[in-house]
Amino acid sequence: MADVLVLCDEDRAVVERIARSGCEPWRRMRPARALLGLAGGGSVRGVARRMGAHQDTVRRWRDEFECSGVDGLGAVAPGRGRKPSVPAAVVEAIVADTLAVEPPDGAVCWSTRQIAARHGVGKDFVAQVWRERGLRPWLAAVFKISKDPDFEAKLIDVIGLYADPPERAVVFSFDEKTQIQALDRTQPSLPMRPGRNRTLTHDYKRNGTVDLFAALNVATGEVLHQTRRRHTGNDVLAFFRWTDLHTPRHLDVHVILDNVSAHKSEPVRKWLAHPCRRRWHLHFTPTSSSWANLVEGWFSILTRKALKTRAFNSVADLTDAIDHWAAHWNHDPQPLRWTKTADQIIAKVKRARTALTGC
Image (cartoon, rainbow, N blue to C red):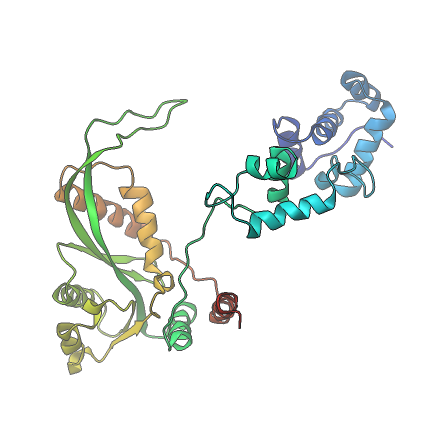
């Protein structure tokens, strides 16, 4: 067999990453470096001599790569390798204590050192056990299960609009982002430079707040928005009127929104009841299910890219920043795609309810 090894671009990139990695095991780095030597035109004998390895070892690395690909680099065959020095019973006891036993000092969760001292092992071994079992006791995921009696019907209605919008209609995902603060820092920020991130002072000055109204066109990704001082029923009505003016008259208007009282206020209901608004249809998300409103994703992008870690001298400065970023978004809008089906979500909610109630 010829010594020269041919690597495709994809495999070469992975092998090069492993070869220069500072965290990969030595049993993977060494074969990767040998493979790069062979791919560069080196002979088995020359590569073995440079690496201080036997020629048969280099040939075995090459043959394993040709047989198993990148995943085979440094792989330990079943039954080979160092045997575990900690009994399996101790491992299971570590997992059981992590899941069910409270730390004696009243802490919220165990630390690796506490568990290690309890079972007579090293802290790094405990960290390895947690990693292999997918345990991260220091984290807590926040959740809320909707108690809406019409949860399934509303969810199917909303996701149906995302997945299969009606013809000759525009679907808007609408909500308000309230109380956006115009925060100014007490000292100027230091600019970013190599080796140092941009900095901000920990304290700030409040210069007022503004409420952002936004309606995301589900099909195109374009966003209609307004900034207002309040978010009363009259403010919602004003935004609906403005949206109506910016929507072609031949299209029906379907609006997905949450259950805030301002959305169901008397001025809004009276305006929608008029015969001229027959084309308007409101679709309410289930209670405690703001995640079902697609515009929340756009709010997150806005906050991350235009508002977070910024300093604003006034509400007008904050409003200008929002308007400027939204205008650039609409210049090249990116639709936000809903990927989960209603059946998948309903099944997950049922599992969560079963886990909470035990029935």
